[in-house]
Length: 222
Image (cartoon, rainbow, N blue to C red; front, side, top):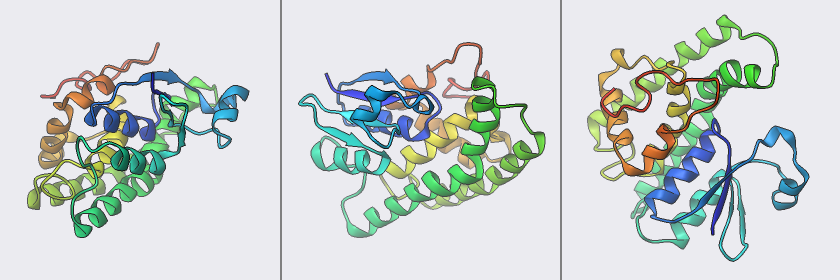
């Protein structure tokens, strides 16, 4: 069976999981905590990062971008990057926006402050750092509202890796209730459509022992 090494609050792992389900591919999830630097996992992926995909034949595909491109080229059940050069360029631009800019400005901060520090006992959370991320996310929600006012999905008419990347990062933040949905109804409507997709349902069922999600987290209707 195909295997995907992941952990709960890795946005890139969530991205790979959603893509595999959109492609209607069966796989087993293998929990891997990358900070443990486990020897057997380092043999599979010397970078020690998740997601890491192991195909049925033993082929290894390591890394966020590599897995995304591989799945889209290898399995043609659904195109998640786009048919035209213009659309593919926009999908990749927005995917990079969320995987890098949103991650650095929002999701990495929230995950570190509200999960990593607690889980790894790295000290107390810093309110001012969380406030910084909470301020940053407003600009991203405004941008989502701007895009979806002009398009069906973030990059165009079709659901794509741009939507998957955005939802993967936002879902990590939303687990802790740090997304001010009430102030951004257009972004909320977009995310409600993503939440209602079958590929998103397993993500919303993730629970971490001792760390309950926000009440609306798994509700497609908020």
